[in-house]
Length: 211
Image (cartoon, rainbow, N blue to C red; front, top):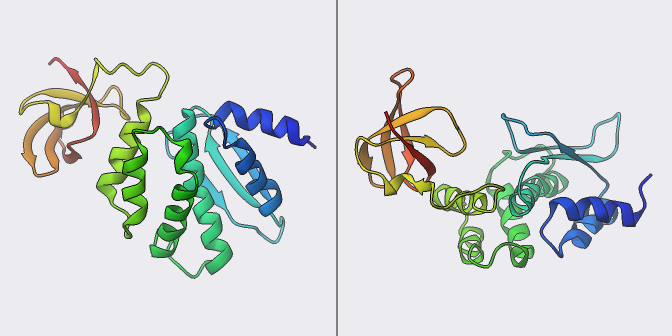
């Protein structure tokens, strides 16, 4: 059984400075949460599991390779699932208005621990239910700028490119696309490997490549 000091020391490795005590209190005193910090998972960044007959605690897992701000962003997402389950059980949609309201409240509660330049965007996001997918993408792109090895000179937004340019999405390295046509907030793109077409958000982080 870890002491409080040991638990706090672990949380400090993954969270933005200053919020480890709040998270510690949330997962050990306000709730009984088994927090798993995992290896990188391609399929998901985190998940939440409600208490079951065989165990009477909540479980949250978060990928341990995330930068501290993104780690907190994902953790709040899973905490919102916990809060939704406490209030509604399994009677509501996983990402419905109830969950969105819980997530918005948590974001506002932890707003000060995110980068200052991201806070106005987070505030707008949390104040508008239903939550905006466009703002969601913008926030995640902004938080990725704090990843280890991020190079602002190399990484662009899709909107910075031109029709016919070839690129890779930052979250799908090694897969090349060609920008075909801009449509308001998205681009129609084709994956060069198989010719399939996709609509990609114009604010998506990309790396430009040569054919």
